[in-house]
Every structure is written in C-alpha cells, then in structure tokens.
Amino acid sequence: RKEVEQDPGPFNVPEGATVAFNCTYSNSASQSFFWYRQDCRKEPKLLMSVYSSGNEDGRFTAQLNRASQYISLLIRDSKLSDSATYLCVVNTVGGNEKLTFGTGTRLTIIP
Amino acid sequence: GAVVSQHPSWVICKSGTSVKIECRSLDFQATTMFWYRQFPKQSLMLMATSNEGSKATYEQGVEKDKFLINHASLTLSTLTVTSAHPEDSSFYICSARDIGGVTDTQYFGPGTRLTVL
Image (cartoon, rainbow over the protein chains, first blue to last red):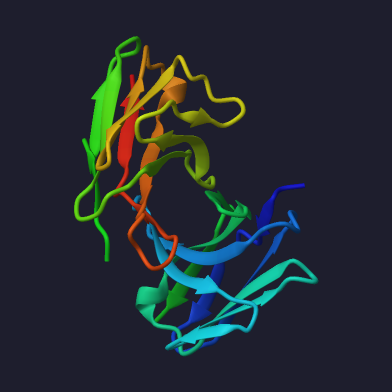
C-alpha cells in the first residue's frame, strides 16, 4: 500500500463548479499535512497546510480526519487558473521534515 | 515568501558524463535541504536529505556513490549525478527548510530537467 494515496483523475469540471479531492495516508504517526499545487513542468507550490480543525483560505477548504487517516481539499467557484495537479503531502515522521507526496490529482477547469 | 533557486534549469548531456546541480536559498539560511526526483506522470520521490556540515542521508534504493551531495554552507547544496545514463533523465527538485521561519515549511526550487542522451 502506498504511503499517500490519491485518485489521479483527471477531473474535468466546468468553470464555477465545486470540486473535491480526497487523500488517504497509511502512517498513523504522521504529524503534518499539506496540499501542494504543481503546474506542468514546474515545481510544487504550497497551497495550504491542513489542520484537524479544518481550515479555509478563500475558495479553498481543507479538512483532516485523523481517525480515518483522510485528508480532503474543496475548491469552490473554480477558476480556469485552478487547472493544475494537486498533491497531497504528509510529513511522515514527527520533527523530521521528510515529506511524502501522493501521485497527485490532475484538475482541468473547462471554460 | 522564501526563495530557492536551482541551476541549471535544464541540462542535456551525453551518457557517462557527470552533471552538477546547485540549490541555493536566497533569502534565508537552511541547515537542511532535500533532493527529490520526479519522473513523468509520477510523484516526487525523496532521494536524500542534505545536512549542512555533515553527510547526506539517502533514501532506500538511492545510490550514494552515484548521487553525490554536498551541503557546504547554510545556503548552498549541490547534487552531482555521476556517470549519468539515460535512465537518470528526470526532473530534479530541491527544497530548503527555513530554520528561522515561524512554521516548518519547505520551499521548493524551480527544478532542473536533466536529459541524458
């Protein structure tokens, strides 16, 4: 089983729609969780950290369920510029910034 | 936000040659830098953790004698791919952890695309 699993997609959704991505992780000792965005042939960029209480940043909402080892990302009112690959990332060892990346979910927003 | 640069951004070389990639933290100090590799349509895979002033820690399956890492200062780490072969062609990305930051965040460089002919 992969340490971090994501549905690779692709997700093709119309502009303005709401889209949700899910991610599961296998190591119950994981400490920190993130969503990164990666554009084609570019480096990943941090989108947001994910906290147990859930957090929101504009149109983006992230949720963490430690009991189910599950992370989600919700994008509301999607824009064309949201088209990218979204990477679920887990810090698998507390205090050691070793990030484990999911394979990513490809999102394309259709005009 | 913090800035990490990589040089070169792309390189094409012949099989058997060695390629050096530099990773610099431009506006912060980084005792720890990380080297990742990403093959097409695959996830980033951590190759090694580079620690300033000490030996790098390699992930399982990564040959330390082939991928030489040097972290000589708080702002520079280098990855040398020795005797590169076509199967080493990949997107190499470094990241740096800001020791002075409020949160433990890794900042990624723009990546180096290596093509070995």
